[in-house]
Length: 263
Ligand code: KIV
View 1 (tube, protein in one colour):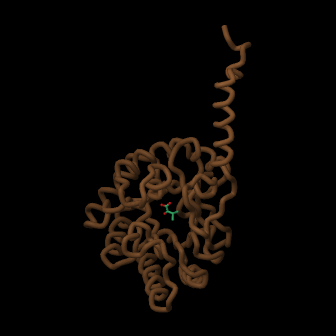
View 2 (cartoon, protein in one colour; view 1 turned 45 degrees about the vertical axis):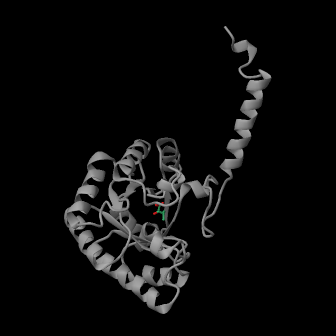
View 3 (tube, rainbow, N blue to C red; view 1 turned 60 degrees about the vertical axis):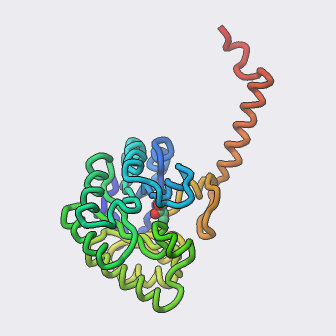
């Protein structure tokens, strides 16, 4: 059965944790989907992990759609979401509607994600939801604001923790179907999760969240750098290096291809 936005709400009620991963291209997306991931996010972190930029800011809407189309071809079961990139939605509700509409029309995605919880954005989100577009919020450390926030944990003091809590409630009232919480204290993740009826998806936000997300390049050991809260489940960088060195040796030793394969 394909995962839907409604299914995520049911899983929250049932206490069934939601597993979310990012994807940037077809082959990995197909593996993640077949392995049973619930939600696949074409995150704008692809600017860094797939395109080699220093931050997420340079990636364009066209590039996000290009990657999302490829990922979508590999996904049959998981709910597919796409990040709206920096400056594709902040200028006006009309700009956001146009960008989100393009994502839904041009890819197989069922929803989009935007970063932040300030008042203008909450109004924009309400308009997107009104137009029938499922929206996931993103609070705490929001990488599109890296030049203001750095990559530091957020919500550590009572004032900013309260601000994030209030923003989570405002996003829920505006109609987001879920909210991603990044790099905040576990106690705050827990508090938000208990207060909201929509699912919270955490990354560095503690085990109390309704689900967890990782950047797949971190999980696979392919990233140049990974945050302390990420977990490397396999070291593919080492495996790939070894395989490539083996291949180079075989070519230079003329043991690949084998003689028997010559006509
Ligand atoms: O862009 C991204 O990969 C994200 C992560 C926090 C999952 O939003």
